[in-house]
Length: 162
Image (spheres, rainbow, N blue to C red):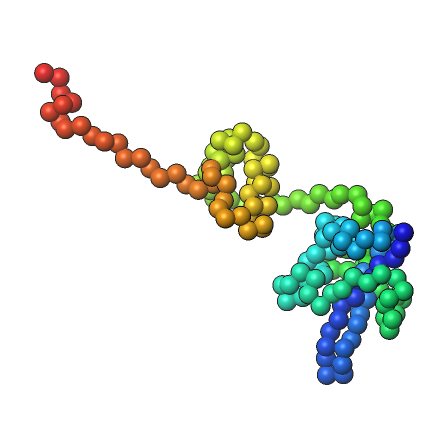
């Protein structure tokens, strides 16, 4: 187990400034695992710059962060996140709550789509959000409003009994 540091690099008039943002203790040696755990724990928004995920932020293993004072890692970050994190805290999955306000028409369509797919409204919504974020070509089939069918009318002479 090792320590990882997230460093935010800013280029200014006085040159490159490297500020420590998050220190992870007791983590595995795989940077991919550490990065995924940080994102899953809600650090992804805080570790972005200009809307770019991990923009100007790098994940550096202990022993390779020369010129950065680890004592400057903040104790508290925006959003109630901690600047010093133990791996055991990151390794446990965290669920987040999202509340949406939907108009009656959209709520009805989403409910009908979930029923048509045979899943709960929660499951259907999570799948639709994941599909939207992964760049799926089209939304789930039941999400698109179905075109109204036009009824073919028979001529009046055929409708009347003789």
